[in-house]
Length: 325
Length: 263
Image (cartoon, rainbow over all chains, first blue to last red; front, side, top):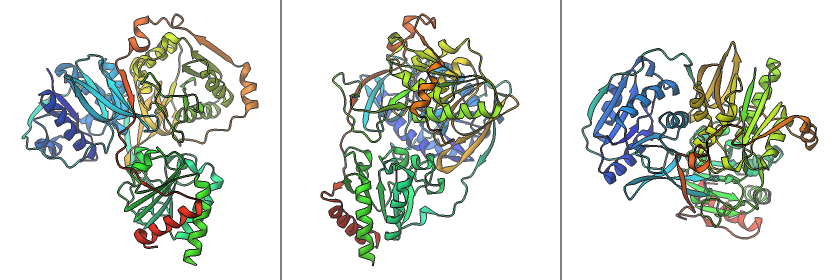
C-alpha cells in the first residue's frame, strides 16, 4: 500500500486551519510521488467534516467512535496505529499543534516509523521523502532524511502553507470500523477552558509597543510602558515575558495568546519565533529592534534597527514626548 | 511520590548569532552560553513543588550528554532534586529523539516512579519528541503542553495549552509522563553557593554497558531519522534598516509612526 495521508484536525466541531494547509502540501507531495491523497478523519460523527474536505482529497478515511468525540492522545494513537499498520501510507502528515505535538512522537515510536517534527516543508528527493525543519530559534534550517523507511510521519508547522487551497476531487469516503474495543481509562478529557478576559484588549490598539525576552529584566518593563504612554500606544509582549510573569497573559501576542493587527507594531527584543509571528504578521507596519541582525523578526518587519533596545527605548520615548508636547 | 525529570543542557540561541560549522551538520558553539533548557527548568521546579506539597518521595534528574551536562544536573540538585543520573557514554550520543528516548528508557526502566517529567521541547533542536516517546516505551498515559498540574488520589489533573489562549483539562492515571510548558510556575533562583552545597548529593555516571543497550540501538545507528544537513534559510524579504545613533533612529521611527500609525 502507499498514499499520502493528512490527519484532519478539528476542535469543537470546527476544522482547524492547519488541516487545509496540510491538504495543500499533501497534494503536492502526492502528485510528485504519483500517489493518492487521503484525508483521515477521526470523530464521533464525521459527516460535517467529510463534507468540508471532500473536494480536497481523493479518499476520505473515516473512523467513528464515541471515544473520538474530543481529541485524546491515547484514543487517537490506538486508532491511528491500527489504521496505519493495516494500510501503510508513505507519509502521514499531522499538524505541529498542541494535538499533533503530543500524538506524533508516540505514534512514531509505536509504529517504529521515523518522524520529523515542526517542519516547514516536505520535499521529494529521488523518490524519497525528506523534511525541512527549523532549529536553533529558527535561525537554521535542517534537512531530515528517513533512512530509507517506507513509511514516515511529519508534523507541519502552522502557517507554512496557505490555507486557501484549490482542488476538485470528489473524495471517495471509506468508513473504517473503529478498532477501539474497550474504553480507554488511563486518560480522560474533562473540559475546555476559554481564555480569561483581561482588563486590556490588545487587539483593539492602533499602535502596539511589544516587548520580548530582550527587555532583559522585570525592572525594564516601565521603560516600555513609558514609551507606550508617550505614543498613546498599548503595551503587549511575547511569550517569555508572560512566562516570567513580567506582564499578564492578556498582553501576549502569538499562537497561544492573541492575534493582533494594529496599524503599527513595534517589536522590541523579540526574536521572532513562529508562534509569535503568527500572531502579528498581518500588522499594517512592523518595526523591529533587536541586537541580532539575523533575528527572524527582521524577515517580517518592514523597518529594523540593530541595537540594544535599552539604548533605543529612552531616546525614542524622549523624542516621542517632545513631538507630542 | 517518586518523580523523574529528564533535563538537557542547551546553548542559548534566541539572542545569539548562529553559524554552521564545517561538518555542515551542527552549529559552532564556542561563543554560545549554555544553561539548563528553559522548559526543563520549569519541569524541575514543578517536581520540587510537588515533593514539597506532598512530603516525601525522591526526585531523580537524568540527562544524556557530554561531561559539561553535569552542570545542569548539579543545578537541578541545588533546586531540590535528590539524585542525578548522567548518561555520559559517547556511544549514546548523536542519536535522534527516538535513540535518545531509548537510552533514557533503558536507564530508568527498573526505577519505580509516579511521574516522569520532561520539558515540552529543547530550545536548541526543538524536536519535542522525547517525552511522548518515553510514554510509549513505558506504556504509560501522557500529556504535553502542561500549564497546570494537580496530583491527587493516584491521578494527575492537568491543563494543556491549546492554540488561541484556550486550554483543555485532562485527567491521567498515575504513573504518567508529562511534558511541561514554560510559565507553569516560577522557577526558584539557584545560587552558586546552593550548587556547591548540592555537591554531596549523589550523581552517578552510566555507560552503554550499564544500561544494557546494544550498540545498534544507540546513537545514529539506533535512530529512525538522519539529519542530512544544516543550511541557512533563504534570505527572502528583509527589513529596511535604520542606522545611526539612538536619537537618529528614533526620529525615523517617529516619522513612520506619523505616516502609518496616525501619531
